[in-house]
Image (cartoon, rainbow, N blue to C red; front, side):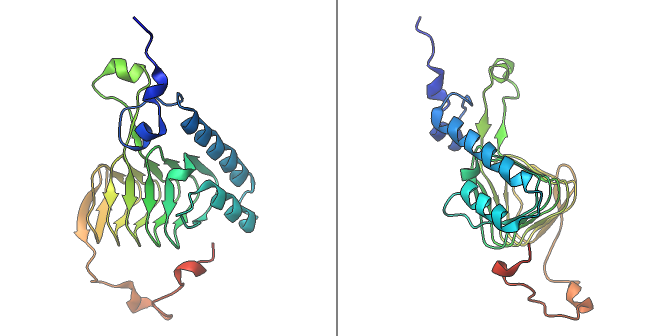
Length: 217
């Protein structure tokens, strides 16, 4: 019997299209993994004091179709070309983004400290597959103007709608509709955000605030 060609199961196409794959067997995927780690190391070493250089590095990490987000180090990121950010995105300290599949963050998304966006999983029932190192990745999408509190975890294949608030410590395992307040583990919609009890009653400035391209971070 001829030995199995493991490289055919590790291609970039398999990894990014929701198929079972073996990481580390494809030169293209391995090169992107190493490229991202090298640039993330440079970004983290700036220590949040050289914002212009940080933007240059993030621009190099991300794909052409992505805007450069505001971001605080440290960052933990795999496969930077799979992270696509809209205008005005902000990602706080300690983010972990395992982007074996595409992670899309809409305009004005805010990610609180120590959040995790995890696109990749392993076999649950098939112990031999798990021992063999198989993975499967599914994309994550977050709609515009959604805010994550601290320590939120989003699992593979989840889509979160626009104008949502995901409370601190939530574990999001399923899709969330627009205008939802999500709490708990597993995360559940506790109420709709439909324009009642607006905080603007306490405001002494313009409701509009910053434009998306003017955020001070």
